[in-house]
Amino acid sequence: MNKIYMDNGATSYPKAPGVVESMVNYLTNVGTNVGRGSYETAYEAEDIVYETRELICELMNFDIPENCIFTKNVTESMNVLIKGILSSGDHALVSSMEHNAVMRPLNSLGKNNISFSKISCSKTGYLDAENISGHAKKNTKALFISHASNVSGSIQNLEKIGAVCKDLGIYLIIDAAQSAGFCDIDFYRFNASAIAFTGHKSLLGPQGTGGFIVSNILADKMSTLIEGGTGSLSDTEFQPEYMPDKFEAGTPNIPGLYGLNASLKYILMKKVKTIREKELELTELFLNELNEIDQIKIIGRNDTLNRTPVISLDFGLNNAEISYKLDKEYGIMTRVGLHCAPSAHKTLHTFPNGTVRFGISQFHSEEDIRYVVNSLKKILNM
Image (cartoon, rainbow, N blue to C red; front, side, top):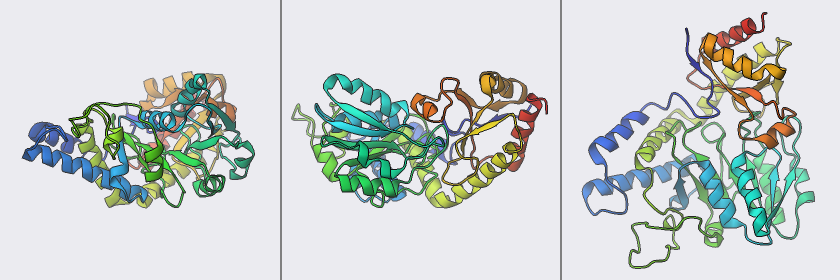
């Protein structure tokens, strides 16, 4: 039986060439902490970590490596940003397509007299930038938005959205979990104040890596979520105010950052545009084949315009059964359910049943796509 991994919306597999080797090299030949030792291998580890900050900046057109903060994942990054920006009496804006990495922290802040408004998106998952102003209030501080949906693959027009946020004088905070490594990201062209990322999806790095880049203006105004040892200013019991130490307490995932370093070098060498073109070619093939099957409903756009290679399908009440059969009978790994994004599914009219989600990778082939389609046809008795 073929084994085809189609759950790249959750985490990418396989990882970029060189990721495993870089992590093994660290664990075998380096092994030291950063900021805690004055010897050669400690300096080597520090160089790699700093270089990884620079690579993130290169990928996102950002020019302050010290303001690239590493966390475990984009969920932690969004928690640091949301809880560091908002305080009692503040109001925030979100789109109706947000992941629980945004919605749960915001809902938890209700007890702190912090409110938010949800701006409805279209039934295919897109936010109209013209609808933002009508939801803004005098105490609105920020708009938190996913660049691309983990359910429908819809990519938001951040240039227009960022222009509106600039006119309103509010921060634009971007969740790039699904877009980093696939979309062209430009911190300044988007008028962003912060962009959160995760290493284990389209950045092709290991789990447990992520972070955010943040402007000097916002970094100075944010409060910290976690405080502790940084290897710096050890004579004081107060958190340093300078970057990146302000937001990086405790030992980071150095093996993971070695792996992320390798995956970023691979992406920058191969170029995001080249990766995107290959994945969209395969996505177009998949969608064209699916459009011919009446029993399948494609959620969101049924073409490749303004979308990622994440495709959600609805088979009615049989979604779980379809996903199970794909795995057990055909070796095709998908994700079924609500994908930690109930608000998005309500917007797309797939709540509470959810969808079967497929995530296409540059490492797939046309033969893989045709095998998946033919497997679906067999399951549907076509």
